[in-house]
Length: 526
Image 1 (cartoon, one colour):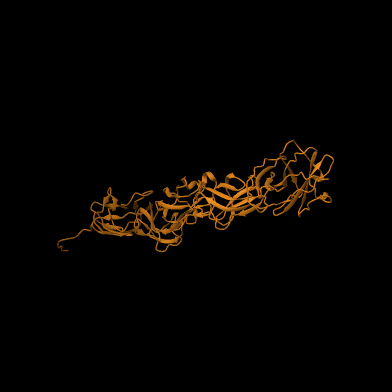
Image 2 (cartoon, one colour):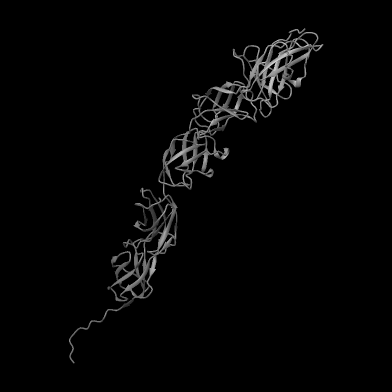
């Protein structure tokens, strides 16, 4: 005769993705960890009898079900048989159900004395999967190997974890987010993760988890997060929060920029705002400042905090007025207009006669000339070619030493002092004159007006012409001064001291200064 002395049977899931079953109310039941290095990480009772839980191995794979029952405190009890099937097991006499016994069909021995809770880990091969359902009954065996009738039947379904609500303490990087749900189990670092949505809409930005319980996870908003749903991944299964529980991430915001115009690599630009994220120099992130579409380099950063960035305009920045933005892992701030000024870096060559060409090199001249121009000492140069970084011009006939000024199509300008216009004398006519008579000096680089420049007749120790009839870029007309004698003529240009500062031009041949022809007077008779 069988004696039903078996107490209530309870079940505990050993799984990587949660456990669940039953239909009535829920209460949390604490169950100690068992042998084999397994850790019970979630316990859930549906009716006070059935206990469900999650145990994961190091890889996070579901491995089976843990059965929990109350020890039969009756003398002569040798142990227990536990029966499992994927369909409901018949009650009553267990005869004919031997193939359904777990533990390889062997008896599970009685242990200890007194009334206590016993457990057995039903490790399955292959391991269970999500939505697998198992039915359990058990019997008690006495010292003469008599087996009781079947116990009550309990079933369990390997359930997937779910997210119910998401609450955020703020919307900035590092702010806390609380994820409520069920069947999270306990965190296994190798297999369990919380992911946020990135700016492209993919849920793959891993968060730093500060707390993980079976029903609640607390984490920080990670760098790279954007508006969107948060997801919990357990053992390769990613479950997203329900619609309406999206994270509202604070994109970076620029409130002030000073100055709002500059040329590349010049002043330090101060950008004030919020949620700029970590310093790219330290974090190795894709956080960036963009001038138009051109990002700054790490070497352009002077300082970086969550509320202020100091940087240089990157050398590669191009355009006229561009939008300055801060990009935090694809989350782009509002834009602020920034004027990229033209800047002359160098001139080559830096000296020459009128008519020679030279290059003006620099940044942000504009890709086309438009109404742009180049002047030398205020005189317009003929433009031969125009590109964003180099403009080629011809030294105008009326130019003298002075600054080169490049004016861009939008009227923004840059100047560089440094072209030395070298004067030259090509001819003096006539080359035989009397004091007080006019000579014409032809050449180049004389300047449009005399402006303090001089003509010196070098014979007789050098005599400066005091009567200048006319003065132009290529022609000077003057009178031979009193005291002049045969010799060369030198034109000295009074202009800015630039470069080699060659301001004198001397004729290649002499002008002959002769005496006036004698004038015969009186009446003679042969």
